[in-house]
Figure 1 (cartoon, rainbow, N blue to C red):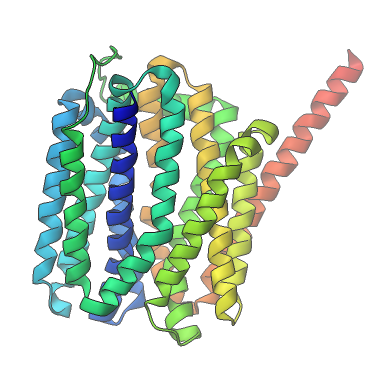
Figure 2 (cartoon, rainbow, N blue to C red):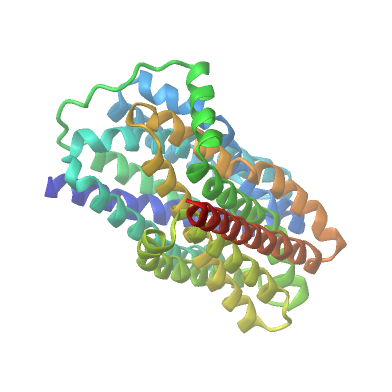
Length: 395
């Protein structure tokens, strides 16, 4: 058990470092190649767009040998990243987008495969602990990888970051071969389209799941809406080099580590809906800080966003795990991935267009929507509590 747990944590460290460093460097690379903050803001779209197909891709992971699948996908990701060594000019910027799209597809498949592998690699009593360690490892990489990626980019350009990032999935594939797996527990047979409908029925039909998932989806969607505006605030508004985005990424990673230490207790004491609403409110506060004309405020805003987004996300995932019947958990989890991250496919291009109105306008919109969402949850909870009190008084 200890061997497999260590391998999974190491996999999270390596994959988190490689993907975080490359995703940040890709945005900076596109910005330098094209001179367009709108196109740079669309880099994240390619990574998140495949989440729209997560329920179907998750089904593919159920139909293929899972260990072989994740190894093959990691090796294909490494090969795709190495093609970026040929990028030299604006005319080749499309290749960066294409590789990011392929990376997004690969991440969806690997996430589905890893989720299915864990029960055959670890005893049930260890799953929660190991998942927590993996989350901490990934968030820790968000503290280190942005600075490393931005620094390497400033030193030797995007090709150097691509080469480093390509080494990570190769190392991960080797680690997968060292796992010792028992027979996987039997699960429900893949059901295709009806399974997707069943996942949606649980998400929308159970209020304790629906509310935190929707709040988290709003907050995460708004984060995509603000990407281009943050780029513009750094480069145009404050006149800072584009590599300062690495500092902001590290600040957000630090906030995420703090969030991971506190969110479990928050969900237990206040409930998933309240925790998600608190995360949305913190995200809104971060957007306000990003509007201020000082670089320390940009860092403070990234810290707040780094706490808020994980609070909302972990609350939503916890609600799905706690409120879903075991026989439906796989498809509901895959469908919730689409609901949580799919909105970025829409909000990223909207934000890239809205930044031309001025970078503060999209940030103000995001702050307003995030805060209204948090207030709506609070009002709804208060109304529910009052109805319960009146009903108890009548009884």
